[in-house]
Length: 244
Ligand SMILES: NC(=O)c1ccc[n+]([C@@H]2O[C@H](COP(=O)([O-])OP(=O)(O)OC[C@H]3O[C@@H](n4cnc5c(N)ncnc54)[C@H](OP(=O)(O)O)[C@@H]3O)[C@@H](O)[C@H]2O)c1
Image 1 (cartoon, rainbow, N blue to C red):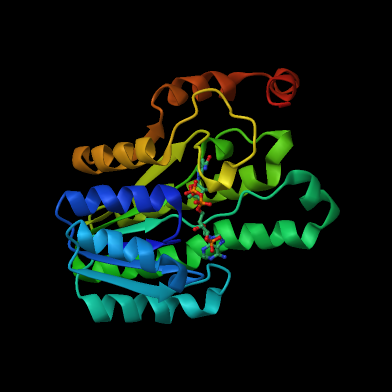
Image 2 (cartoon, rainbow, N blue to C red):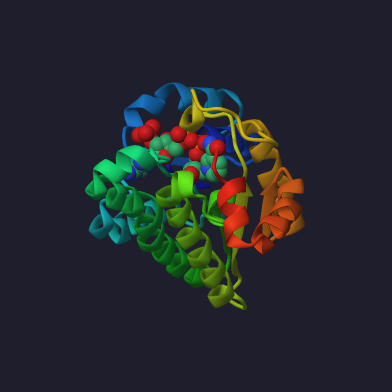
C-alpha cells in the first residue's frame, strides 16, 4: 500500500492494521520521510517486508505525476492508496492571512486532485486498486468557525465522489472516509467535539469498510444520521448550532 501523508496518525494506525492483516509492502510518502524511520522499523517488526520512505509535498503539484509513476514503477502493482495529508489551520489566522488560507486549500484539495488523478490512471492500467480519501464531516456542512478547512474537505469529498463514479467499471474504486473529531496531533489542544474518536477507531473503520466494499464510511457511524439532520437545518439555526 501507498500512503500519501505517511506521518498522519490515522494513516499510521491504518497501516499497522493492514500489516497485521498481511500487507507486506508499504510506501510512506511524507514531507520529512526521515522522521518516519522509527515507524518504518515498527512496521518491519510487525511483518512488513518492504517499507519505503519517500519525499512528498502535496503543494508541489507539478511533481506529483512523476512521483506517483516512480513509486508504481518501483513497486509493481499497488492495491491501496491512502490519501491522508491535510492541515486544519485556524480560521482566525486565515482571516488575517488569506494567502495562508489559499495554501491550505492547495494542501488539502488541489494536492488530492493532482495525486488522485495520477493514481487513478495507474489503477485503470492495472485494472484494480482502491483509493481511500480521508475526508471529514467538516465538509458535510461547513461551519463558520472553520469554513476554510471545511470548504477544502467539501471540495475533496466532491472530487472523490466524482472520481469513484468515473472509475466505475475499471476495476478500480474509491472509498471516502468521513471522521468526526479524532484525537490526533491535528486536534491537539482543541476542545473535543461530541462523538470524538481515536486514530485506531478510524483505522478499524477503514479496514472494515475495505472488507465490506463500502463507498462511504462515517466514523463513528452515528455521524451519518447527525449530519442528515444538520443538512436540513435552516441556515439561521445552523449558524447557532455550528457556532462552537
Ligand atoms: N484529526 C481529526 O479530527 C480529523 C477529522 C476528520 C478528518 N481528518 C483528516 O484525516 C487526515 C489525517 O489527519 P490526522 O488526524 O491523522 O492528523 P495528522 O497526524 O496531523 O496528519 C496529517 C498529515 O498531513 C501531513 N501534511 C500536512 N501538510 C502536508 C503537505 N503539504 N504535504 C504532505 N503532507 C502534509 C502532515 O505531515 P507533517 O508531519 O509533515 O506535518 C501529517 O502527517 C487529514 O486529511 C485530516 O484532515 C482528521
